[in-house]
Length: 348
Image (cartoon, rainbow, N blue to C red; front, side, top):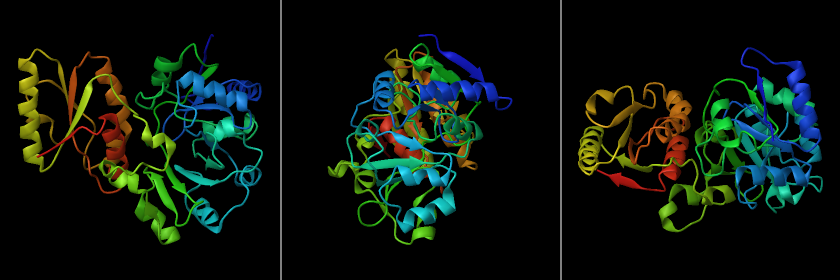
C-alpha cells in the first residue's frame, strides 16, 4: 500500500481534508494529529474499518477504540443515554483531552467497542482533527497511531516509522501540544471513575462533579487488582531497551543512577539516562538526555514518547530514568513511564 503523506504544518488543506474524509467514508485509515498524540482513524460505525485499525496496529481486539466526534449533537446517536455528569464534563472540558465512557447505542458496532456495551467518546480540540472528523462522516474511531506496545506518536515521523505502507494516509500537523493520551472517565458504573490519567487530572474533575474516584488498579497495580480499562492491562509505550525507573530523594536518585550506569558500562553495555534540564550536569557517563524541565511539567509530557523513540535509534541496552511526580500531570506521566518500564522501579 502506498501511504499518502499530507503536510498541514502550515495550515489546513481543504483538499487534503476532503481526500482524508473520502478515505474514511470508504473504509480506509487516516492518521491525524490531535492535541494529545496522533490518532489512527477509521469509520467508527464500520466494523470492517475498526478491524483494519486493530490489524494495522497489531492491537488486541478486546482493547476498545475511542470514538472521536467534532460536535456535541453527534453524541446523541452513539449513546443510549446522556447522564448529567457527561453534560457537566463536556461543558467544562470539551473540546479537549477528555474521554468519557458511556453506554452505547446499537449504532456502534462491537468491533469498535472491543465487545463491550459501552463506548468511549472524545471531542478533540485540534482543528485538523475536527475538520477530518466532519469530512469523514462525524464518527472516527482512533487509538494512537503506532504499532501496539510502542511509544505513542507525537510527530508524523513517528507514525510513518510504524505504519508507513500499512495505512492509506498520514496528515502531518507538526508536534502535538500535550504528548500524553486523554484522561478516561467511566460514567457508567456508580461514582465517576478515572480509568486512565491524563492532562485533566482528578482535582480538575472533582471541581466539576464532586466525588471522582481513581481506578484502584491504577493506584496500586502490585495489589493484584486489575485496571478496569482493558487497554491498561497491556504493556504500552515500551522502548526496545530495558527501562528502569529510580525513585526517591533527588540526590540519592542521581547517585544511584550514576552507580548503575558505571556498572552497566563496565559490562560493555550502552546505557541511556533520562534526566531533566535541572539534573543533567549531575550525570557524567552514558547517553544522557533531558526530558524537559521540572519547572514546566508540560515539557516532560511532550518529550516522553519522543525521547523513548530516540533511544531506540541509538542501540541502547538499558535506560535509567528519574521519576517525575509533578503537580498537575505527574500522575499521568508516571502512569505512562511505569508501563513503559514494565513496572521496574528501584526505590532509594
